[in-house]
Image (cartoon, rainbow, N blue to C red):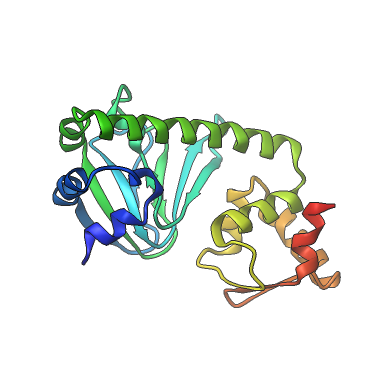
Length: 217
């Protein structure tokens, strides 16, 4: 397993010195987990942050009425749960593997040692600011866009503009990720199929160019 190669694919670590990356690779703990594994629970003491190398991970919070509200679906190459490295002593969300996953676990104590290096610390803070902007955009998206726009934005973010998408998550999980009920998503998919814009069948989504173009109108 080439940990250094994987670290080079992560935007957050871009610009970090070769020595820092080598040090980071030495503290990365590879962990493979099957689909449906809880990596950490909301409110648990935060001992580590994670880097996803393979698969998909859902981060969600529980609403006051007990519903799971998906904050983000993590794709390969993304870092998550990094907030526990600083002031947060517990995980603010629950992390669940949506597929079989390979993650690299980075213990808080090891990261704190690396953060004593100024270059590494500056890059880490920049990543936190990007994540904060993402969450602000996510809130705006959920409040201002309709379900079709949110579906389009999710597919673009996770897979890019493609005509065929191999999707690892099911419809219920995707509905949660875009802040819609499974019934609402089902109705939307039926409508998109009638319009010959998008068809989801047996884990494959076929997308017509018109589906992507609608966001440009």
